[in-house]
Length: 200
Image (cartoon, rainbow, N blue to C red; front, side):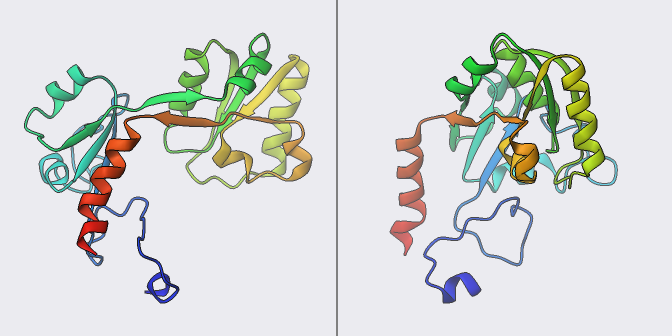
């Protein structure tokens, strides 16, 4: 309501799929083939908030991090738009770190996805520190990472999400790896236009 008062035409919610208090015009479901749906069970037996079938059916499009064969095997009944984004790392940062030993840390939902991205792009990862999602870093935690990196003559790398939580003092010592995705952007915007703007 506050956003509407200030003139917002579109409101984008992160992780708002199961919020039934808000009427949504367009729902995007993101699936990573590395995690899929966990054990396919609903809370408390598993990580899901509703059944796979009902969640998938109410989505207007899916971003699937995997290949088309995996998707067809997983959700053969899905007939709406599916996008298969590829992960793109910053070339300049990659070049800068290419021949160095790397110590990585992340406080995101699935830190292993970040570490695998680094490895898949040829970086030599010698150690990593994983924290819970939205972790607030303590000084001793960052100092431990820096001390280990210093003793092994290694560079320290983290995500953009984690980097912004650090003080300027630590940001000078730590590299951030910008990551973006490549997908059919023009088609996606047309889909948004047809489902949102054309209804306004």
